Image 1 (cartoon, rainbow, N blue to C red):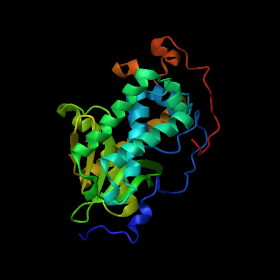
Image 2: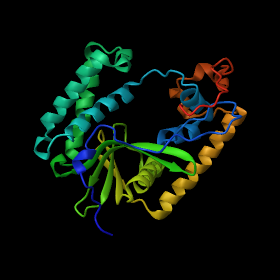
Image 3: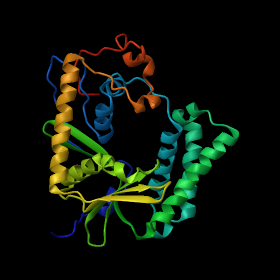
Image 4: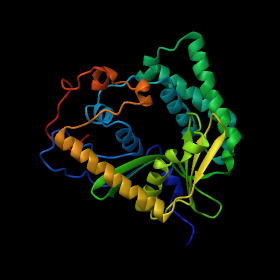
Length: 300
């Protein structure tokens, strides 16, 4: 198979490049509005707890920002800016400067950052930890050797009538001209026995690249910046087809839940971090008064 090539690789070096399909038309008669797309995070959310999925994706209830999520966003922005520079400009100092700029912008314009209400030593610790993650990245690879062809690349494709989408942190070419997907992780690396559970998004990315770019990635790598751990997966025909079956099954379950307005809670360890306990019947809450949307649209 010949190496992957693009007529204008630099043209993909843009924040969020959209390659998509027209919005689908959903059947009438749904008790709740169907989401218009599925992503790795939505699939995981539905499998973890159907009711929390409804609160977040369909009812769109507000969720308070978490320090970990906001920190991850800032680090991703810094690395995004790093790879918009020429190879000789991808230095540690440039990445830290980009992180500083991301912090300054967040303090002035980001409502989620403001909600964290960080001050004094707490804000210093928060910023120090973000800088530690950036330093950790430079211990894992040399950015001057990377050949990126896509940064923060948003891909959308149709899978059996469902729009699936995912944002790839970095798409690059390896020495053989093959596609490589890199995903930055700012949380803790999983224990070896739990690694397979983190690969749902890997196969999503592989499917999207194959569907929209005509080539399956040679590998997908997860870079855990805080622990210096890299987890590598090699997508195969079997793994991508398995992803298609799983997404199809999840979508059918979402359709059934929306048609019957039947979203059941799944109590477990994740409940400790759930923002919707006050509305959850498993914790004495009542979800009935929440927004009800019987009219089907394609905009969710």
